[in-house]
Image 1 (cartoon, rainbow, N blue to C red):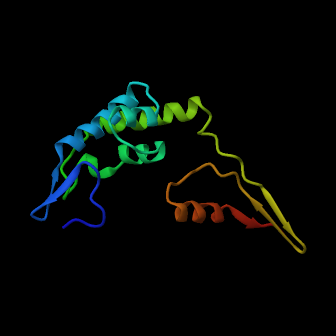
Image 2 (image 1 turned 120 degrees about the vertical axis):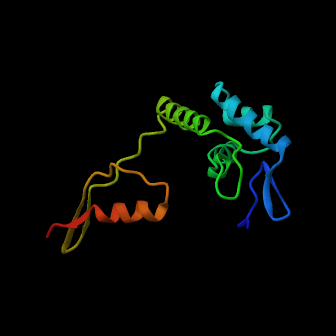
Image 3 (image 1 turned 120 degrees about the horizontal axis):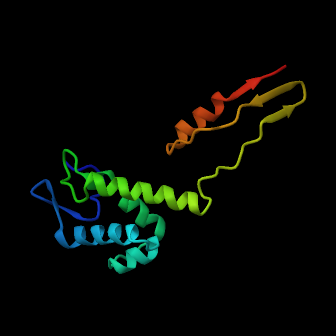
Length: 140
């Protein structure tokens, strides 16, 4: 049974997810445009989608499009890997992969703490916070 929102490109028929061929074609066009070098907004517009660039990226990275126990596959694993590689390439090219270093030392009267350099990033904000807190240590 479907949980929550039905992703773009699918519809529910008789309790089962089926591919909406017209919408699925737009999802594929979005991905192909992005891989051909278009910006996210331009690729979405060319695919006939009215969405913001961040929403277009989330759409392309939607895990349901690879197929799972409920949703049939719209995108191949190979295309998904190419999208991720292109996303990383562009992030590096435009300097978006460089995280600002966090302050290494925080001081409070009577207490001193140090924080090791953060060299990992997690998409889950709770895991990221847990990781960052694990880098803090008391020095007094």
